[in-house]
Length: 284
Image (cartoon, rainbow, N blue to C red; front, side, top):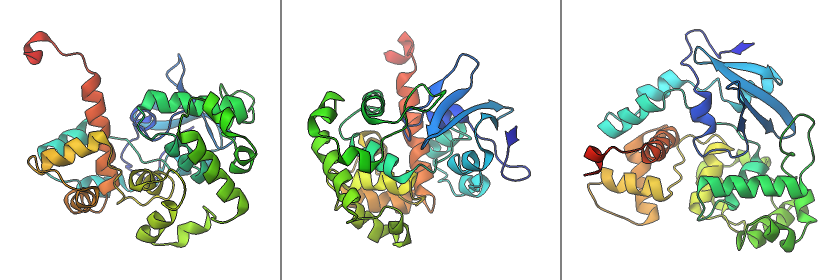
C-alpha cells in the first residue's frame, strides 16, 4: 500500500528520514525495507518511486509518524537561497521531520548528551533490552514507559552505558510518574513556554529541549544546535561565534519559518558529506 498525503505530494526519502539523527531504533532489512516500532506498534516500510510503502502496520499511525501531511512544497519554497541551504535541500530531498512519541523522544535525547548517533542508538537499544516490553516480530522491545523506568534503578541504567545520564533519565521518569509534569498537556503551551517547562527536567538543556520541541511537539521553527549545526551557523555568520542564545536567535532569523526543517537538512548533509571517502586530490 502506497501512502501519499495529497495529489502531487513531494516524495519521501525513507532512508534519509530514518538516518538523519531524529530516531535511533529502526533497522534496515536485506529487501531494502525498514522495521521499527512506533510506541509498541510494529511497522515495516519501504519506498517505491519515492513514495512510502507500508509493508506492515496501521496506515493512520504511519501517516502521522512520517508526517506525510507536512506541506513540503511550501517548506521547500521557504528554504534560504544561499548555496549551502540549497545544496542540502537537493541532497536530502524527501527527508521529513517525524512525529515521535513524546516520552520516548524526550528520554532518548536525554541520553544523547555529548554522544554521537551510533552511541545514542546503542544506549537506546540497551534500555529497550533491559526494561522494555517485547513486541512480536520486532528485533527490539518497545521503549519502557516512564512508569516502568521510574521503578528501575540507576545501576540498571548504568549497565546500559548511560554514565552520568542515568541519574538524569531516572529522575525525569520519576517526576513524570509522580504527575508533576504531563507531557501531553504541555502541548497547549507556546513554544517558548514549552521550552522553559521542558528545561525544568533533569538533563534537559536548551539543545535537548529544542530536539523534543521539533521531533515530538512539531514546533517546526525550533533549532537544536549541536556541534554540527554550531559550525554551520558560524560559517553562515562568516566566522563570528556567539552565545547559544545569540546563535539560536540568528538561526531563527536566518533559516526562516521552518528553521527546524532547514536545520535538519543542513545537519544530515554535513554528516553525510563527512562520511564520504575523499580521493587524494580532494584531500590535498
